[in-house]
Length: 139
Image 1 (cartoon, rainbow, N blue to C red):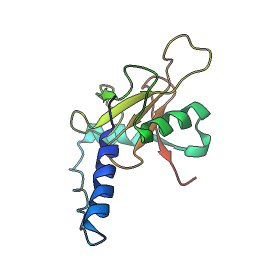
Image 2 (tube, one colour):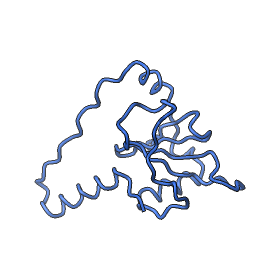
Image 3 (tube, rainbow, N blue to C red):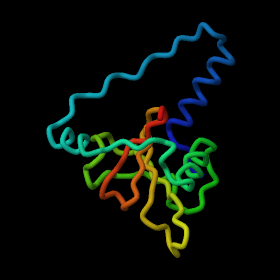
């Protein structure tokens, strides 16, 4: 079972707060480095999708990610390399991919959730990485 990095970080923060009390200081993540022009164009190509507009199977996948699995496919939780260059440039291992089950499909289908290390940095693709939408949890 692979545990997404953000799940590990959230667990560490919770443990620190429980063990160290409320006075534990938590450093904010460092700001992202300046983005190259190619990445800026790619990042601009990422759309948004409301959490409520996602298919039910995507909600199921997001729930499994938060729980740390178990996942339906061996590939779930593996590193997503961003070879297409659509998502913002990040270091290797930053993104992980998970299958969104497609009813009626006899294989994994084309739908995925790709997570980044930041909390609620979840991208949905319905077309096998040709396009991505950042999940907006506030709508």
